[in-house]
Image 1 (tube, protein in one colour):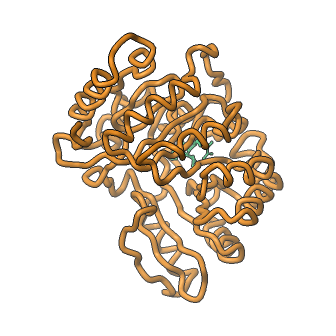
Image 2 (cartoon, rainbow, N blue to C red):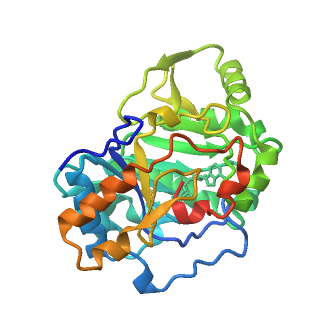
Length: 331
Ligand code: SAM
């Protein structure tokens, strides 16, 4: 079978797999307060569906599968899913994206089952503010989750902060210091106009340049640019001299990185999404539950990759992505 190379010559080797649409946090830029997943158990990919689909992707050249959600740690059997995926031939990297609320409980088992590294979303270190942004989140619990990840040996651990003007932009400096003290990495993400909540949050958008100016001023030019490595993804990363930490920015809006896009997304319901900022998808759940042969399903995936758009349209056609919900796609 050929590899997954799209019509723009991009090699797709990274699958972001959402394992649930449920989330215990309700970050205002990600979802409406009222959002409740409308899915029955049979709508969601089973362990067997997941294993089969990831095997197909691995045979087509996917090497990295990130577990995301909703909140992935809410999925029953998340450690089992981690184990199933990390044992698949060809998959050599299985990171996790989590809000860390439950990480204290799961870190040890996940690490044993192949989750070596983790991205933790954390938008404030002020408990009241954190609670407001997440509409009910518990900062103490999240910090326990960060410490548990450190303790079991996950590495790298990256804190992901959505930087928002008038919300948490006065904390960029203290969050960097927090990461340095813990010996872990930190990245600031621009708000993206995905779904109505994301579009509304654009009013609080801060550009990569403004974020960088704050970082650089705080760190007194102690930054060395890191050229892209295996785990960097779309971030611009810098080593902070004299520390074990890096700081980075992900700027999908002011500086899109579509020309190097190497990823596709699979929702918990089995929809293959080719681009975060476009409305196209195909159902792989239907395919694996049909009597199509393995080769026919792999062919279907190859055909879908040919339709991967050249770039997202965040800057021009905002309506295009208003039906999407980040909480269902997994970021
Ligand atoms: N629950 C997990 C977590 O908190 O990381 C995984 C899912 S969450 C949707 C993945 C990432 O998407 C988080 O870092 C979150 O902050 C980010 N995100 C959600 N909506 C966003 C938006 N409109 N703009 C930028 N990032 C967003």
